[in-house]
Amino acid sequence: MEKSRGKPIRTRARALRHNQTEAEKELWRHLRRKLPLIGTHFRRQVGIGPYIADFASHGLKLVIELDGSQHGEDNHRLRDEARSRCLEARGYRVLRFWNAEVFCDIAGVVDTIHAAAETKTSAQPPA
Image (cartoon, rainbow, N blue to C red):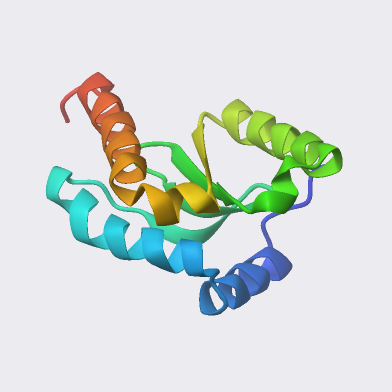
């Protein structure tokens, strides 16, 4: 049974926003600076169903997850796959990046996110 997005999820999301990893801080700086130029809006640590996404744009139905080295382990990888399936079932596209990518190739990460955002906005009918 799916947990509702009640107070515990919101409380945990708020706590995570105040305790971001260095990779999350770095990507957030770039998301806030670059992506609003194309009309996208991302939020940090967003509750979606039973999960808290690192970053999400509800308008674009786009989730960005940053993974540390522990996510390469089998048990973490299986949980990440289940999480992605759940988010995709809710209509979200999930982009995953390694923390190392954020530090070594932030321009490439932002370009990938930008391309996904542009694809989503060009596919949406005009209002």
